[in-house]
Length: 343
Image 1 (tube, rainbow, N blue to C red):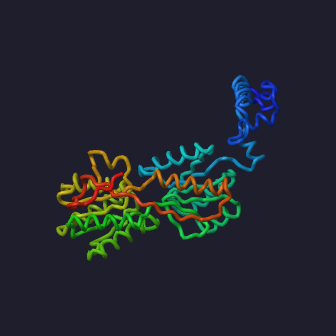
Image 2 (spheres, rainbow, N blue to C red):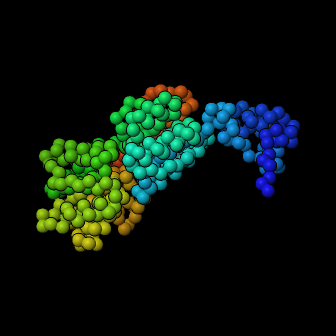
Image 3 (cartoon, one colour):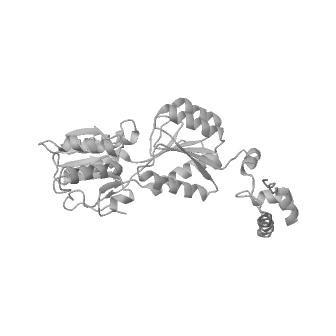
């Protein structure tokens, strides 16, 4: 038989305090004296008491739960970023409820509807877009939304990204300075703002230096698609001498094809540059030159934006872009005199 749950009234009786004092002790940020807290926590431990968070949320109107919606975790950037988001929110007394989705409107909208039913205090979407109708419902319900690593043309939605356009432009400058003439791009998903902005910046950077992109293929942010794109681009006689790959996850697959299937030397025959700077990029097996997404600063900006809305009542929609350095390693020819931007 399941034992009866210990109530806050029982804790109050054991500690010799009021029930409201027990409630304050277990409410983050509430005013309570150290002596009072010590008595209550001692009694709670002796009785095995745990506060009913859901019941408290009915009284306060705050669940202290943040909904986190993410499309995929195979890209190393996201598990690392999600861990940082979770730790940062926990430091402020919040917890995350994670939902996985397919990156299509129906799947995203269904999950977002479920999150609203859970009475979350806010929502973070990681590389996921949402419909305008659902954005309107979140706004009407007073639930703030922050898009992490994804932009969207909706004035109601906060967003935090790296400066994808400038990152792409910087990579173009680097490759041209290295003397490359036949430059191709295996892009991120064309349906994402990140993929479009990185390619647009890359094209602009080449144009500014009198170059044009030889070819571009949408890699869809998928390893298998990027690997097939590399086979198409590099198997012919008129081979490219440099490739910018839209993220590191795809760049690793591209390097494997170039080196082990096509027997090309990286960077002797072809330079490869990625985007993200995930931990694997610095491993000796890849030693990938890549544009770093400043995940620490992106997480900090995301959490601050969300909590300003929840706790301070801010209504200022923020569109934040954070620049990152080009991490120079061994997968690409290094131009003479090129500055090392590593942090």
